[in-house]
Image 1: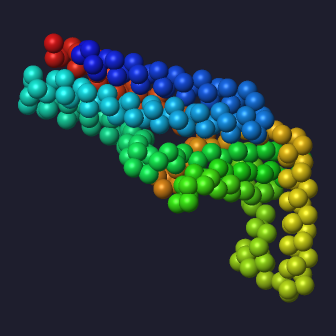
Image 2: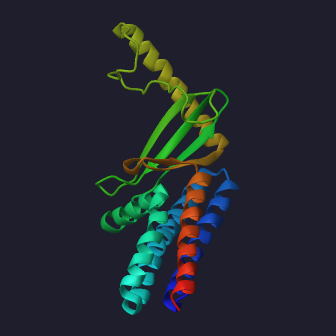
Image 3: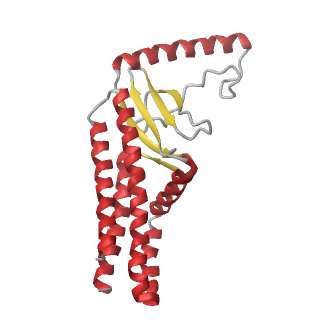
Length: 237
């Protein structure tokens, strides 16, 4: 394997290992502030992993193309198909482009806390044009293992179309009950402080994955890139 390509591959593995270690650390705590802090570190290392993984193939092309010209181009075009067939690799490339051009916005972090009667979720959304992090939140009825895909409690908003067609008096009573339930659940959640990282999301790319599935896809992409670089060292010496 060409020396510069090999070095860039080692760098990519270094950041992938850091992402893996941080996600393991997140799994070992339920403290909301700790989960958020480690989640931010994970996003930075993930960004570095994505940048490095893209750079491996760019360095590989530069090292071999000038010496082997069309022979390398034909070989590389075939190998590149395998990478493109793994749909997540294309999403990582898009993610890299967005973060480099727009700042480190993605992925957003979704936290879940399971309470006695309901479940709360908080999503830290970094995509705001203002540059400020928006915290989206919601409350879901217990009864689904794939939270937060259970039926949501209607948003506390008097104009919400999800509310049944009731009289204004009944609607106000319902909203008041929801408001009380939300306040009670929010108080319980903060006291319990039992939060977990539930999803890594990039809505614009239709990414909505558990941390484990997100990491698995990253590992698969890395392994394809690693195999391409190894094969290149055997064919082009």
